[in-house]
Image (cartoon, rainbow, N blue to C red; front, side, top):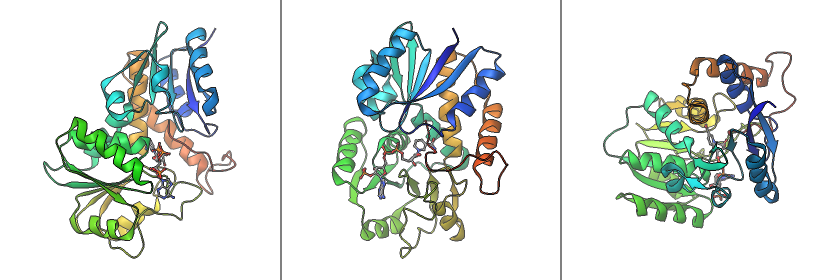
Length: 299
Ligand code: NAP
């Protein structure tokens, strides 16, 4: 029987993860497969039970299960415990261990593009699973944080969790023009951790048109499809340095692969596979383009 890894989530049909992970598996000459598994919330517990009974080697977990999966596992590592979110499960002979590689994936890619200052304030847009990984990563770097979120209770809960682990100043702000204006006047880093700008709604941006971006901030947008989300374009037009989340996507995938296999991930091969998969999605890209962009997700 072919050994496998699965991506549990909904929707997962158009994930880039199979392309990235299967490229790594092939490069190592392994007879393993990475597959997607569409799992609705009520199917999560049976899916985890299948993982044990079928001996799947590992899994990625994505929207909407990153938090719900925690109580179904046998052990949670420090990154998953702090963030209360799991994106990677390692099956150690039936003992399931949850990890969060989004956190290290984000910090790795942020550092590759920006010299993280010793002090300063970051504004994080959103307070969902990805925002949790970003916030804990930035808190470890010692930066003060402001969370701008649509649902106040989500931002407040994340702020409380951060204060429990870190001695830093965290503010939870409403999704309102005044909060963005405040960010514009005092911030070193803006991170978009909402899906605003993701295909097919790529005309969207989380940043309001009538508020100028901060003059010296670095902008990191977790959205990676399209390659240059609208927020990245807005920032570049304002003379700011800005990147999309493609580098984070690759690094979190590489770290998951390393946890599962104990092998060094072939990052260049994984990157080439991602580039190819993205090229297939580009309007006017290669002929075998996939039919729509609606369900492109991270894992
Ligand atoms: P999530 O858990 O569903 O959280 C989404 C957050 O965005 C929530 O705080 C939500 O607000 C907010 N939001 C959604 N629509 C909004 C809108 N119209 N206006 C204002 N806020 C809105 O999702 P997630 O897992 O955190 O993912 C967020 C984004 O990050 C997605 O685009 C995902 O693809 C991307 N991501 C990228 C990577 C990568 O490797 N590059 C990794 C993980 C995630 P509420 O709090 O009100 O629900």
